[in-house]
Length: 121
Image 1 (cartoon, rainbow, N blue to C red):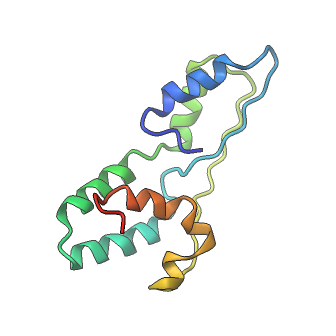
Image 2: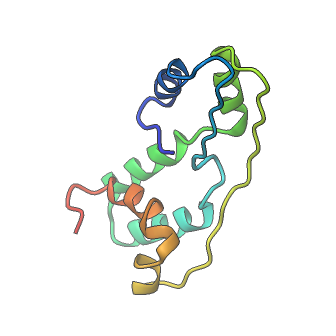
């Protein structure tokens, strides 16, 4: 789940809807996820002189929470039986259309990249 821009507040609201004994299971792109792909995009942005977009990409990458942060949020919200696991995800992909049309990237990762651009085309 992409809880942007205020992940803790979104999580707090979700927890408020739980019945006693209810469960909350969520997944999100944490630190380390897609790092090689972000680097690939950053190199291309640098090559093309896209300074503003690179700054936005850096900001987006830096705001990704860690598993420790997520656990801290759940503890702050007085959740019990917390189990947090972190598995950074990497996806192998070539360049060009194969990268832009990759089914695992198109639905999330690339949309995050497109947010860095005023013109999404």
